[in-house]
Length: 401
Image 1 (cartoon, rainbow, N blue to C red):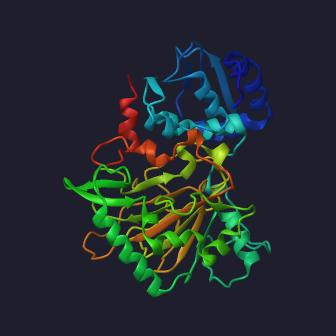
Image 2 (tube, rainbow, N blue to C red):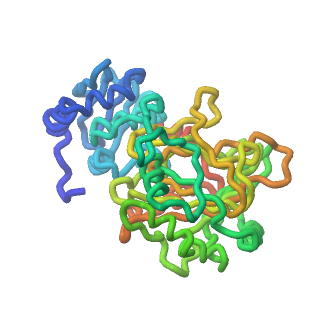
Image 3 (cartoon, rainbow, N blue to C red):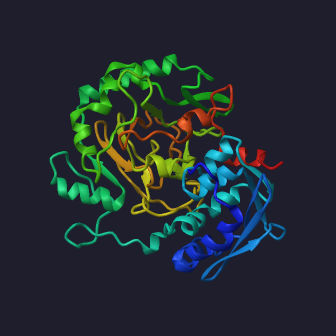
């Protein structure tokens, strides 16, 4: 962001109308037609309301008629415009205040806002047409072997926003990873700020440990040549985001059945939905599956072709939520996805199994890229002493004051 904060009124009088007239308005209307009006108000004064119509967005001075009003500091508003800050991160961090309506409506508006400000199309699965590099329809559930044609894999990753690869790690390696994961489970303590906890019928359950780099076999995963070879399929050089020796930079996730509090299950979301898109992306996330991943054990699902478009969070449990595409993974399989790709981790469909999905997760970004404000999202999410990461809807409710 520039040292001098741009003029809020001039932006809404001159710059934003030009962007909307140039095509951004029609893009935004596609994602906002069914939404009620929304306004930003600055802490220093001044407000503007956005109201959708069939073919565009009206920008109205003031917020008297807005259904939802969110108050931001001037610099934070510009970070939103420039895709440095995002609604979820600002709400979790207590840096936004909802003055009227409900803050979750901001999340509903977010794809349209990104279209208004940055010209990013709103994701509509009915409009997505994916083709392989020969012009044929792309099978969004296609899987690859490590020795598959690299041009085909790179095209699939570029087009779908994710990649499923079978048999990258061996059974003996996965057994070592699992043994270290069990040691991490035994060491985790609610409130240690390095683990995520939920509750099942009132009892704490461990969902994630973010310090898996403390164990040697898990610590070696991000720089394993087989994984780096897959990361090399990206269109630009990407590097592991944490320097060697750090305990963080790789996490272990345990899917747990019946979690009724906390973030054991994840809605449809993008990883930069907490903020930082402009300074961090592209980010490539690798999941190494240590146990089978199925709907019954709690799988990881993707929305094909969503990674260059705008899409807001959706409750994956809702009857009308998209199903997306899942990878019926076995131990040693790997998935890659861009952080912008909409993905979800719905609850396991069975509660009577002995084993649920366990995966090791790490990320890669442009060399030198750093989290916005220098804080990892894990620091922002940990606001409770019991280690539980609250659902965003509860956090949003507290912002109404």
